[in-house]
Length: 162
Image (cartoon, rainbow, N blue to C red; front, side, top):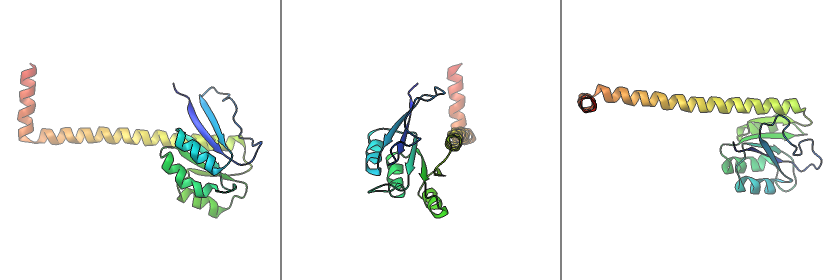
């Protein structure tokens, strides 16, 4: 199984979020970027399932690059963080497409909970797509069987198969 990828965009050196081996062996590989431009280049170069982005950074802040990140990685779950966590910032981040907003400093458990919520949302979205496809297939089959012409065709197919 391919390792899952996460990207952390944070200008703070020595962050508690620095890459380290995943203790649970869940196959998560973490890349880091020191600013928004570097983070965008990384997101355009490879696929990341999770992106954790700081709001306040030099040159280009997290809210500015959020939309670009989502365009570059449409299926990535973006979590935004800030030491200056204001309700307005959190709402703006979610409006722009962030999955969640974390106020720094946060505990590892808070980050893990946000990631678990994101994974659950993704699981539900996959299940929803699967169920919609199944329902559509059943509707198409029901519509086909309702047509006299299609019923004759189905009977002919069955007769040939026997």
